[in-house]
Length: 151
Image 1 (cartoon, helix red, strand yellow):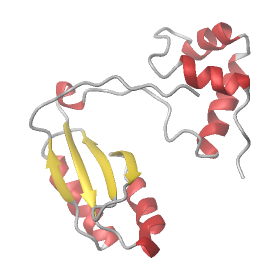
Image 2 (cartoon, helix red, strand yellow):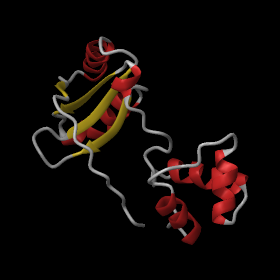
Image 3 (cartoon, rainbow, N blue to C red):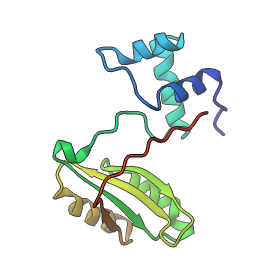
Image 4 (cartoon, rainbow, N blue to C red):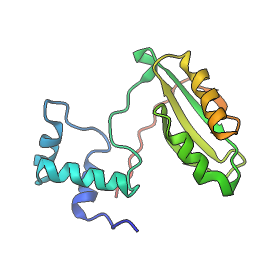
């Protein structure tokens, strides 16, 4: 069982959803803003990641502007195999934002690759590893919706 986030954890989550200092020692600057040490901030972030209170902590890049590929993907996974397949899919470094949905297509994730051509190869690798088809839904138009969760 993971520990409940305390006031400092909540302050970290609330303060840094929308940006993180960009400088030589960003964790040091962020920790100073929170009134804790750099080591404590890093320890707390690692703990939240280990306890799955955070799915990731890091920058979001616009893969296409950097020459990469980006696609939304979905899979239909039997409930009794969902956790196993999620682990297999999440093992790919190109996979981000993998979520369960209450739908026939119950696993949705974003695939970000170094080149657009790599999308197809990674999808094939996921299908081979999991034994399930991946439905590829590349972006046709982009919309930006800011989303924050107050903790």
